[in-house]
Image (tube, rainbow, N blue to C red; front, side, top):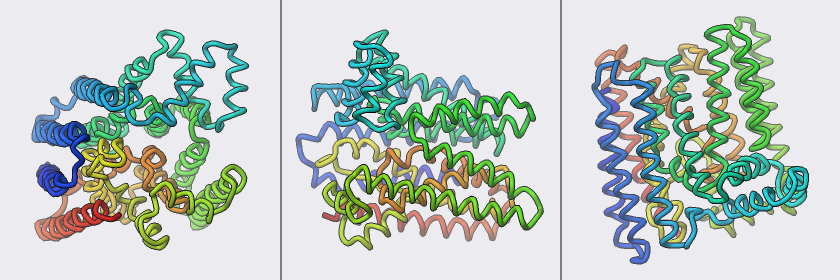
Length: 447
């Protein structure tokens, strides 16, 4: 717990410094957003510190769900008020996609179910179908984006409890609790719960897919395999490639547990096939649905402002973002929504260092119980790097909860380290955190 206290202090000090450094460049009209973002990081820090050094009976499902619900409710309320102040709507700076889901849901409830499905498939991507189906179902109760926010808040609590349950299989109770809490009340996750996008439901489905796998591994009951398949089928309506990443991660982990050399070679082939296959599918998508291949994709990213500097620099940044990012945007001057992610993203980047150390530790000691979630993070990260989407939070979000789980899992093993090992680890962590601080400044000062 002492290292978590140290990490939380580093998070607080570095975040405050970043906000003070960039406040001189703030456009006055975005002052409310900047102050709100700053207050969010202070509240986040205080909540984390308040959870440390308690007895095990403190870390309960009830307390976790109460904090997630309370913080989520207040965050969603504040996000919607800011959205209405700046844009006269409740889409929280996501009018393009969330607004589209809203319009399509309204069309669906005013027509037959079959006509609604046909309309969506005729004009929009298949992976948007799940979001419209859920939102249109909610709109049959009240045709307002606010009911979506309420539903997503409830889903976020259930997701947090699911992450806690996964963590209980992997680490001591208090560390499992903190891993679930720090993700569930992060500013970017609360933003998605406020926006009316599909990611909140998708994170829930991914979380419970892995939870049912771990339940099966622990109990041997085949009902959990049935539940797992149900969640995977549901995910097909949101982002089909994730289904293959989850299935591949679980299957490869099962093969790696075996002692035979042939099984490990087979697992390697499957892993390479998954990464290559996802990139081929992405290439086909880019060629036939966006009017070009990789070169067209890069041109599009340049227009979107996602290519800062040379292509080589952009790929390097995407590699970093794939494993420790994406980098936070401090100022709301051009993209207000990005600044709302910042408090949570800074903490996420900081704990990505113990995540990478944890991956090394887990692989070295062959702790197979962690393998499915580590492989899932690796598969999705590498596939996003290829298509320059590592900086796109929406695309990277599905694997974020497991970065928190692996990171806190690694921190839970530090008690077994001797004094010399801990000293070296502290030096490595402090130097890494300083480098991350400098990279965030550099990223935010580039034109």
